[in-house]
Image 1 (cartoon, rainbow, N blue to C red):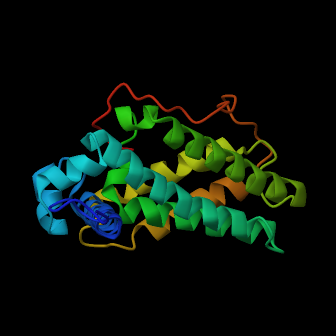
Image 2: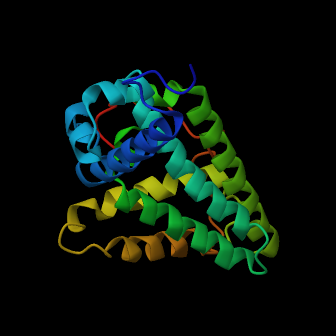
Length: 215
């Protein structure tokens, strides 16, 4: 006898259900944060809770999959910008894309410091993003359009800082983050001659003493 066992989902159904779950989880996490329940995600996707756990063993595994999608999206932007003619403009566009992603997806900030970051694929994706941020920053440093002591890790950390600064305004002024992005850009391009008072971080920290505090 060939074909799927009666009552069991076919391979195409399984692929479809996984896509529905990822889309529903991304939407609900983005709008409401990571406290959304598995039951709510399943309802949004139009499937049962059992279907969720057939694809993802835990909520943290689902969060990791969503994070990977967001990190891949930003990584694609960074990779494309590495070949741009204007390194200063490329770094600006990378930072704008990063802050816009954080503003759009509440879950991205809220998972910082959570166990999902212990997922090796997520950690590897964050490392790749930091490396891409450093490559973009190095090109801008070489062109002399940013501070000579600016690092890619500085840039990646600034993305969350800009989002966090604008967060109280975003419900009524969703574009307010652009103001704080420009202020940050002025800071990294300023040529004051003054050295920064603390050495740069060696790598983006992945642990947080307050895992539920967001970015």
